[in-house]
Length: 309
Image: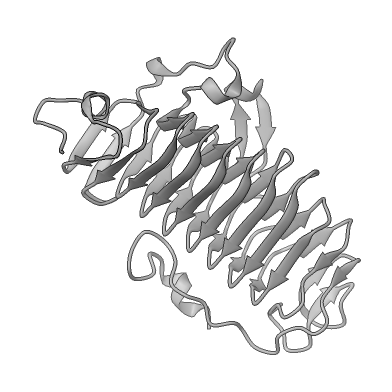
């Protein structure tokens, strides 16, 4: 079923039966969408279908977090949802997922939000793939969640800011941020670049984080780690101004390319990006990993991806 001429996206979602596919024709839609049942919401392509948030519909005061409405698209208390082929703009959170399972966000662009491009809270077995989260406070945040996949995305130019629905908490500019007692997050094949603070951050109480095949570059700090249990493999960590990996706890970062054949600098022996002890780096890669294209296109969305190996 499709959004009818003159109909809002929300009206089409409301009349759709569980399990339906709701297709959004090309155009710009000024509204906030709430999904509370299994369905697929599919645009005509991130470059053809845009949702600009109607901020008057946002609600969070006096509600438990799983009942918030703070995104351009909000998925709450449901399962088996697909969101694909959209650009979302102008929200507190671009796509807000709370207390839900088996949610996939694919081939989307989420930009220019006060907080995160994608925010997954208290959810399980969700995936964000071939999408972009840029020019926000944080590209993607997942908290209190289990088994989250962040695969082949772009998170760039995230610049930090205050988040009103989090009591005006201040975020630094981060590409991928994990916090609040999360467990089991896979970060694979992403480009994390030119964020104003960290490419990726792992907070306290976060366990079982694995990274593979990411390009983490040109941030002040590539990866900040505040909790044990982070395992990095075949990442390219290069050109980060202060630290490639900054950690006060042990990090398993073997088989990583640090930008120099003789390994990382700092606590390492070489001339590549610096690491802080006790990051485990031996053996390191002597040349860059060849990385798969990332982002919401079949081809790399930015020229710099093509330079990775």
